[in-house]
Image (tube, rainbow, N blue to C red; front, top):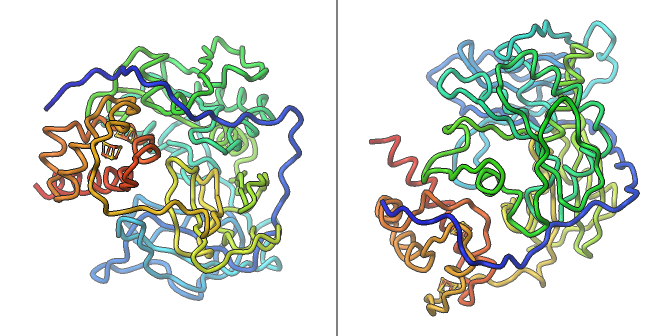
Length: 423
Ligand code: SF4
Ligand code: SF4
């Protein structure tokens, strides 16, 4: 395996967007009549499913497919399960979606589930994993990796989004409360906070160290923060948790604080929605709300062949349906006009070298992609550093031949992991 220096001479060209000085409060989207909840577990005909169509559910109830499931979702409303069906993600991975019909009549005080939250990270993981911000409780509670450093992200990872900055700026007291809860329930040696170098946010508290990241993309990606501020190079093919580091969003830490205070879950996710005209809308929507409800609320029209991107322009992925629900970790949604979608091509590489120059992980992307195009994933990993890619998307952004490099790389990593698991 090639070991390359993580450092490069690249001058990043893209800047993160800064939250405006006096941001408007997010607009709340009403709870829709039907919510779509994703469960990270596939339907298996050989097992007996404990949920069925027509089941009544309570607000806050934990929903799992099987008795022995470790995956779950939490219902944000009291109502009835209307649909249970298979969901496929962009790599064809199977999961399950539930449609819960909201029944406000059913949501009396007794119908809201309260949790017995003790000062134990495993207990927190049993109830709070799917809260807004998707707290990484599974990682923190894992017996396999000991997390020594927790990094609280008050910056957005992709350009155009200001969700994380807004949440951090408007809920700093609750972030402090969440930090105190986590100190109590988890054995984490070090916690630090990441903010933009241009923010005025007051972040000095409880001995938490603050890292100020540059506004140049991709300085706020986990691997870059580890390199620039923790002095750690993420080894090829490993994740931060493999080396004892976990990342948590400001929103997730606020969700934990609220849950420990009220013994109930919260469901309202803050999102940056960017329309075709580039206008940014900050909204709050209940987890499970179909995106089309948000678009309708802002009169954002989607025409055939317009592209719907979940996530930012560099790291996001396109979805094929405007029924896609708001998810706990969804920070940004972009509608891209069909006339503005850059054409991708199957042109051959012209060896311009731009991808190599811009890659922060110093990967020979032009050579790597040749192996990926030929489905040679193991060779791509061993010979051309597939595992060192930090998934910033810059190579695809600069490619003169318009080769979908980032998509090839993501697919290549996915296929490589599948091969490894099969082996
Ligand atoms: S996405 Fe491209 S530019 Fe970014 S680290 Fe991976 S190979 Fe390098
Ligand atoms: S940027 Fe595109 S065309 Fe240029 S060397 Fe890299 S893969 Fe080839």
